[in-house]
Length: 471
Image (cartoon, rainbow, N blue to C red; front, side, top):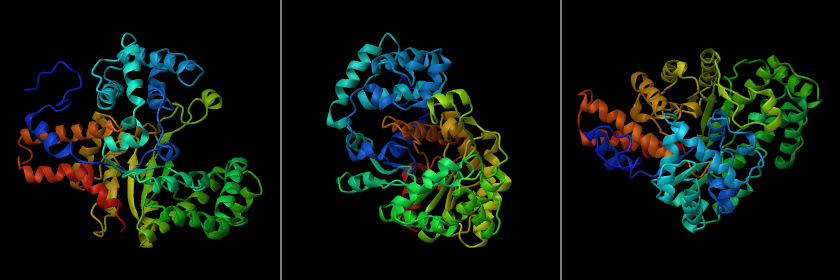
């Protein structure tokens, strides 16, 4: 029987059985957070940012909320426009009651409860009171950037950084004494965009400057990227990340790739086919460097980005106009992994799938390249982006359980730009414990605390800790 409680967010939220409640409170809840992939701004951590109001910490840059607000008929000035912070917050508050059955409704109230102790349901009627109560607490050190990381027991934060970033903020963080380990992640996606020669050459010039070497040949480009990869490693970086529609896997000779480089560097247009060949070569190189250093390669596959040309031109990328893509994934992914595997250069790899129709195909691909060297060497990444909600988390864990080893799963990430997102880990942990608790009470798993407790603690934090350890 479910616990009765008048508050929407209570201690047994989402936990629908006695076993689920025991597993969560005894094993999952105490675990620290290993947030190995997110988009938190390193400058905010370096400055120990003190957020002025609930808009800054909660709505600034949050395209999840913008999409919901637009669907609710809210004008753009209240999303990305020039409305005041409180006007934008009030527009969001008025939208929240319409998000019932959208995960935003759960996240919103979980975040209000965990950050501010606020149990009131957010609406336009409670907006002013919640705004005032939250802003008062945001002025305290406990809810500064450092205070939040401490409050939620965040052991590791993996930010997402371009090779041209100087990582000065990471150097400041390393000297700050903060207990959280904040590490850069090498994301060279802009290196692939030779089909956009003006933007690509501007990026290459920035790489020249930070790497302190000229880039006049393919060899120069790879040497510059490798030097940045080495620099990221020196500052604790142990992962690369790649956000792709699908994996690049058109392998040609180095001389052909060099000719494509020369064409792009001179400012001439490069075809999409040539871009595929060029990007495949760069990806292989990064994969080899990762394997040499014991790094992990993350592949985020399947987003169809910037669907509205009109709004992309007005607002730019990452403003809420991306969706799940219907791309053919598996052939290219298999070729890419196999190519590195043939060279004994396949690093630890996390495959994040955005189209749930591909869950089983991705999950079976993992087993082809597990080589016994590392438990769970090839991972099916946690539910990502549109799939980081309860139902899709269960889909991901069911696919992994049926076709691989859930016990070796390295768990959840926030994948967020917001310091208000750490309850996403709690949401995942409650979903995990509810799933396992249901199996136990259905007689499909033994009710063995040692066995189940090991599974839960490993998936919540221990597997990720071990996976990120050097080699």
